[in-house]
Image (cartoon, rainbow, N blue to C red; front, side, top):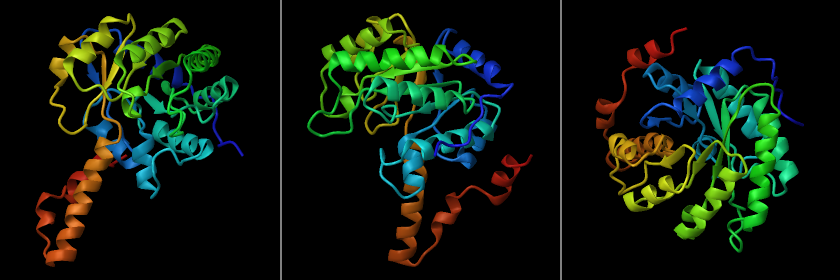
Length: 281
């Protein structure tokens, strides 16, 4: 059964227009990735201007691996994040939870009904033998997603992702070819997660005329928002890195208790009062 969502959200068009405008101003902005309602509200309290969901972060929060959450459950989660704050939200919609273009279009229609300001569709198949969709089929899927997004009653920023560098295929030439084709198919934002060098990021940005999202938060990548802005990047996300940072704190604390019987981790914990103040209504 599909999740209970409604497109009768009077604030959705305003959020979507505000989200689109963030991509048009000079420089890059950070769109952090909450994994639950609490983290979404904390990030909003700290002054970020938009949020993006993370499939990995959500999966970890419910004790599962990434790419094992079904569409209905993911859309219900997305709807909770949308309702948690007044900020625009873009959703990680994985590969649209479907191989065929019609299935991807259906996912976009259901996602739009949650009040999202945007969402991303990736070209990863989830299969080890063929990790990304054939070029032509991948373009058809993006085109179907764009057509569905344009038919929604509110604006929807469609991000198209080329997953080569995340699935062990660091082929920059093919990545750029795919992103250019997704741009021609109508995608609003282009995204190739896994790029790590300034040269590769600059090559992608210079090959496109739409806003580019870059994934940070990976070990050993020293870029700053200022340096990414100088490269022409418009949007910076961190994927599951915030969720992993939180889980890293949990692991360190739990191991200290289990292995040493001590509790020094409490000295680095956020105060009860600070968090309670953030959650005031």
